[in-house]
Amino acid sequence: MKTIRTVQAMAAWSAAHHREGVTIGLVPTMGALHAGHRALIRVARLSCDAVVVSLFVNPAQFGPKEDFARYPRKPKADATLCRKEGVDVLFAPHVDEIYPDGFQTTVSVPRLARRWEGEQRPGHFDGVATVVTKLLTLVRPAAAFFGQKDFQQAALITRLAEDLNLGARVIVYPTVREADGLALSSRNVFLTPVQRRAAPALFQALKAGRAAILAGGRSGAAIQQVMRKVVGKESLAGIDYLAVCDPDTLEPLKHIRDCAVLLGAIRIGRIRLIDNLLVKC
Image 1 (cartoon, rainbow, N blue to C red):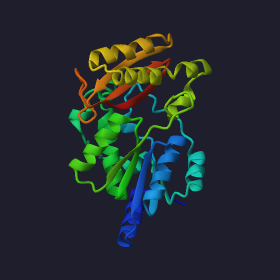
Image 2: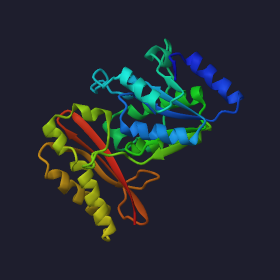
Image 3: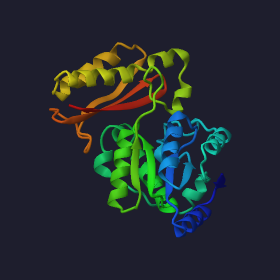
Image 4: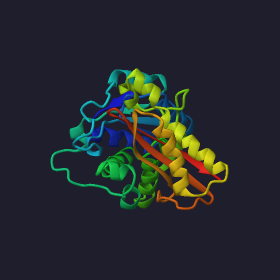
């Protein structure tokens, strides 16, 4: 496995492999890799000739009161995992490589970003869109692989790649979960044992919403109330949002017709958990 730390070297590697007709798969990450990332790497490995994993904790997507400084960083363990999974390139640039002196450009996908995570974390999706645009133009992958856990992010990046003709197919892989349903996340390591036992409340709420829809429920407000009731039973959990949305626009649905995505974010102590379920009627 080759480790690349500069933008210039990453672009040169990509250009050389494109000339040879190599199809490249990109798995963008912020490190602290877990089984969810491993699943993405394996799908990329099966789909492409060469796999690049980017490891970059992106300061532009963190707000001033968010956890950038304490976000988990495990570079040695991440490199070991990538090496074991047959990754060809680990792209691990310093912040100054991605955002050099004088950098001032921002990429925005305003309609998909305005609700839910975008409302809770102002500026977050501009930071995501900007860094992903840079990664896609540097690596020039045939396909880029993202997890469904971040449903809004995946929808936004899919639109970004299409709108800007960035040349990459965006592949969204199903959420990887713990045995009790908790979606894998690098931040889960911060949960205390008591908080960890409370954390599946979000997935339980989403499942209750899905069950209500499959039982014939069609009112978005009623399904939302079902989910809120489940989370409300967990005293440690506070709700940021629980929503019933159109999967394409992410706008809230008053009436569910063919399908819906259930989006949720809760807080347990200082830890914020997000999750979703896609439901077809």
